[in-house]
Amino acid sequence: MYTAENGKIWLATGGERVYLEPSMANRHGLIAGATGTGKTVTLKVIAESFSEMGVPTFIADVKGDVSGMCLPGSENKHIRRSIDTMGITDFSYTGFPVRFFDVYARLGHPVRTTVSEMGPELLSRLLGLNEIQSGVLRIVFRIADEQGLLLLDLKDLRSLLQFAADNANEYKLRYGNISPASVGAIQRALLTLEDEGGDVFFGEPALEIADWFDWDADGRGVMNILECAELFLHPLLYSTFLLWMLTELYEILPEAGDVEKPKIAFFFDEAHLLFKDAPRALLEKVEQVVRLIRSKGVSVWFITQNPMDIPETVLAQIGNRVQHALRAYTPNEQKAIRAAARSFRVNEAFDTEEALQALATGEALVSVLDEKGVPTVVQRAGILPPRSSMNAVEPAVIGTVTANSPLYDKYGVTVDRESAYEILSAAAEEAAAEAEAERAAKEEEKRLAAEEKQRALEEKQKAAERRQLEAEIRAQEREKAKKKTSSASRKKTSSFEKAANSAMSSIGREVGRQLVRGFFGNLKK
Ligand SMILES: Nc1ncnc2c1ncn2[C@@H]1O[C@H](COP(=O)(O)OP(=O)(O)O)[C@@H](O)[C@H]1O
Ligand SMILES: [Mg+2]
Image (spheres, rainbow, N blue to C red):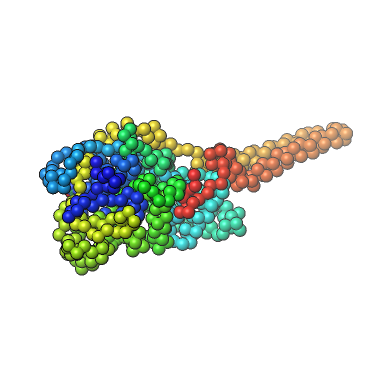
């Protein structure tokens, strides 16, 4: 147990012990340093302590090496030396309660989200849309939301786009222009996204973030590990998905005010991807969510190589810093070192810039917020050894953990609930059936007319009163046929409203209501 009697987390030891103050964990954290300097291990040590305190965590596992946390670690030289020199008295190797998630549904619980839930803002980013195209996407979402149409996957979005384009005139006054050019551009962007494998990411079962909040029999917080090795190959997908999760957390959690310890800790590996090439509007969103989520008791940890990759406005909100070694070969790297050094409160005992370059693996410059929220003077300290395995586990282990997880039944099967695509194509089929009925009615009318003509010819010689009677019958029949035709065409003109109505009635109570979006464009639950 690294949790001290005073409830603090013992994180590192240098000249003195460095404790992380759990009540300040929602002031977020940064773990930075060059590759191989110990960032992931630091993340593990912090996550282990949170788990023991009963705080669930979410961890993006980019390299696969976070997966080892489900198994106890094993003795090695480095760890032995740490135990001996740091004065750790009650060390024991142990595994932690882990749940694996995997967007590609290989070994972990398959997780995805729906197009509706992601919302137009993040989706615009994912599709690389310009202002005008984003505007059209927002309109299309408004249409769907107001009619209670669920967009589950990309094919739903495609069919709704088509629907909106086909009925652009009916929507123009209410929402504005839905230009074919913009719709075309969005359709093309959707194609590209599909080609990149973005379609696996949308659909059901949609991840319910509330499921992250769970504990084992000993009250240890569950570690929710998202396998990101493949997702990470698509940086935009990866960062958007993680950002969506953060905004979802924001939406589902109530205001928490000052907390003794965080409600959940969120570890965002390779966090620089979130900011790379991000448009200004999105940067502002990230900055906002990071700031606002604090009051919900969420502790966000950014893990990145170079702290300069993270924008000033976000860095300014980070209270707890673990800076591993940085290399300084290029002028840019030297600049990064100066910047990193300046972010710390100077410790008279050593030169921050020099120390930054001299740190050994597993060693770091650490500054945390004390219980008053004041950053402590920077310490040069060795991070404690983790108690779970530092290595990646075999795929079979992940498979077993997942099969035994209480979430297995919920996420085990992929489903395709009736959604916009099915509803709109059903409506299209219905319209086609109506057109067919109308055509048949006309045909019948023609046939009747021809028959009548024939009969009329044959009976020409018949009596006048007989002809009179015949004429009456003919008039009646024509009236009937006309009625049939006009009712068919009336149905046809209202097929537009019917699509909406049938959408609502077939989805039923569940989404038979207007959908409402939250602060970040996410769907309100
Ligand atoms: N605190 C530590 N205690 C013991 N060994 C460590 C520690 N930090 C790092 N190491 C060793 O260094 C290796 C690389 O660390 P890692 O965290 O994977 O680096 P990074 O994530 O920065 O690339 C680990 O596999 C482990 O062997
Ligand atoms: Mg790493």
